[in-house]
Image (cartoon, rainbow, N blue to C red; front, side, top):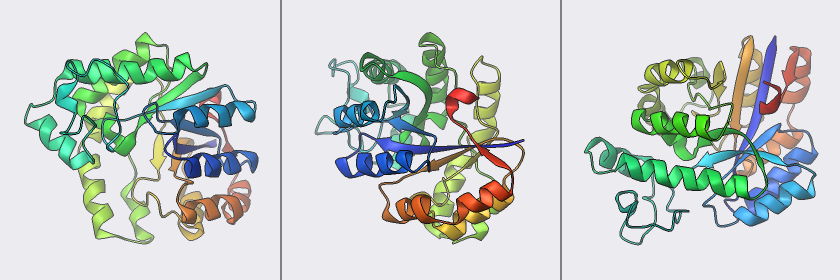
Length: 267
């Protein structure tokens, strides 16, 4: 059976992102979302979900993106922060510091725990965890994410491993380099998740074309979907992806292919 989770990342990132995600939920174009606890519009995202009668979400863990941390104990998480007391801007800067041993694993555990607690304390049932720029796929970060998932009874962690065949649509060298970096960690990540009691998706889509999934790309994804659980990460804050999700032909094709749209809670 082909089952597809369509998860809208970045709830809480901005009012525009929250509005786009709300439109997608109401149109039945997404089956879940993950919320950034340290996002500037976190509270607005929570209210958006409640306004639609939804009481659950994933946690979009963040250690990059220039966000202010959730933890108030800045002394204990100082290795995660830049000069202005916020996270580094992108995964490259984080990865360099991480592999040079300049980031405390205790700081990672503390900050991610605070992010999870913030979502839980907002009254949302946590369905899964994923992360901004897939930073949870780094070995040391994933190890702590799995410990926290077990501690907080979170049943599912995203496995961000996309097949290379997806590149045949709208190829981009910049995206290829990012894809190769992430792909290097996927064998280890698979072993770690599978040795835990945490569920994961069988397949993943949405990394190589992140932010620019048009209807042609999405229809190609539907054509190539395999049996099992596939998670597609989408970013409705992108006008291209919002238009695709709301008005594309992909949904008709998915129905023709017998693809069942499911939420994380149904896995």
